[in-house]
Image 1 (tube, one colour):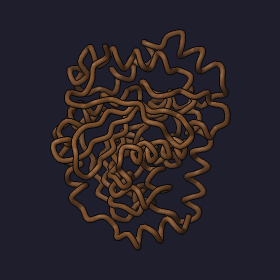
Image 2 (image 1 turned 90 degrees about the horizontal axis):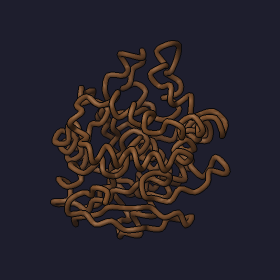
Image 3 (image 1 turned 30 degrees about the vertical axis):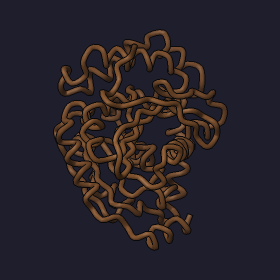
Image 4 (image 1 turned 135 degrees about the vertical axis):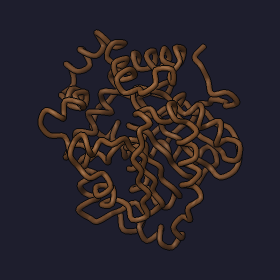
Length: 307
């Protein structure tokens, strides 16, 4: 049996288009939804989720295409567009009784969270982001040899066929590379959890590549339309990142200011897998975010109407 978050139950939850997500839930109170990153599953939140469940309804889905959630064939770019994945999260939360909720995402899950915040401002009360930039900005800052750190983005952006074949032939080595290279503390991901990440990723190569491929196409288009229209995140936003700006030559705070007015941005040396490497600090960050006053319903409705 794969490891589970202690005290959480898992269930299969339908979404708007019939895709079914595997979701771990526990607790009661104001709802918080936690979205995992690559190459992980909802298990990455095991420490943070347990701490928050003391006084919150905590919802931890596997994103479509990951973990034990459905993995529909990619077809058009919309199947794994972050807009589609965000709609999954909103529908799943509503199914579990959370019509409005705080949303925190890491890595790929953070890209879904940003899109959910832009598309569903009336639903998302607070937005937390761990170690990522919005999709449009992420591609804009990758230049020259320094962009080699993100080689996987370019690999999985290629047309269907070669990326899936290459990764499938060495899946454990490929996904394990990121678990090792991005982890500041190897002990933060114990062997049974690491094995589960590799098992889940090995069985989801096509859908993981489709997720990344969408971020090199349809997701950029969606971000660009919103930026051109002046749409911004209407809720309190907290961002915690490693100092990628210093390494790649950009101003992270300035980039995030283009998307959010009510912004708390912090740079921390917690490694990429923050929720596993610094769970107490991440939990405290989320609680600080939740303590901030959300926008009034009238203001949020005005933002939603502008779409």
